[in-house]
Length: 80
Length: 319
Image (tube, rainbow over all chains, first blue to last red):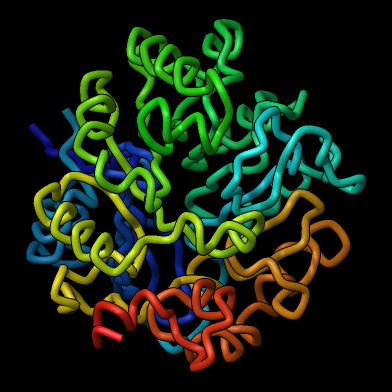
């Protein structure tokens, strides 16, 4: 079975002049959010996911290591 | 952070009106009954502003006032924000949350409420008005019944600081978190600064208390010190005013933050200039505020002779 990955609803992102930002409203509380500066590659991945993508496609286009890192940080997630 | 200014703020505070049914002694914006500005954004102007926020990818909008729900179109504007998937936080005094309003709020996502409570009954009502405490507790019960995520917000003052544990317990008993805000000399807070600001001993007590309650939210550089004045992390000097966030007032004028609404720090108007233009201009204002360690708003608003945040200095150097 093909594993698909997606961006959770509470993760938002945008590209900046240098890299980009990831905003994580993880706790869903009043102003209770985290924000990270990220590389262009992370933004490239989030743009590529655009809904959901097979994990294998992401790993081939970028790298298994970075896909795993983003999964562990909750920036992308497995689709049930 | 990158040396390049951000293309847009991460989050903004939008004071949607200066009208309020209450007249709190420490109100940061000097709001009150009939205090609406004659040129507050119309519904159409507010909708256009929201469209631009969405286009700029602003992640989060914090709605304040005044009392936001005094605006007849407030629910309509909140629906506009949340329908665009902009994380929306509303700070309310909790007295305007009737069942019809809650019906519509309950259907919105992502939306989060913050209800103000500045002490237990006596201290809260002394600042916010007779009977307000009971109304807020009633609102907390009804919000809990509907499972609407809510945070209690307390501006820490000389009068309520020793009751923080009881306020924490009260919030927790209604499934709400507690968030502390620093009292600052802005709005009517300029006039009541000496009445409400913490003593040095109270500042030390507060920092110990926060150490013991890691789940209490603060969002303020002032709280990143412990009771001995030691810096807990490297964010002490990272005031986000004008670099990560900004304030939009009811008329659409843009300032670095809610506590620096002074004419010489205004950077444009969301209707006349457009929000993007106002935001791009705001980087020029940072040079006027970022010399101040701690909270620049306190440093500038308290007229400290050394141009510093005097409460921060008190715990750093014992002055």
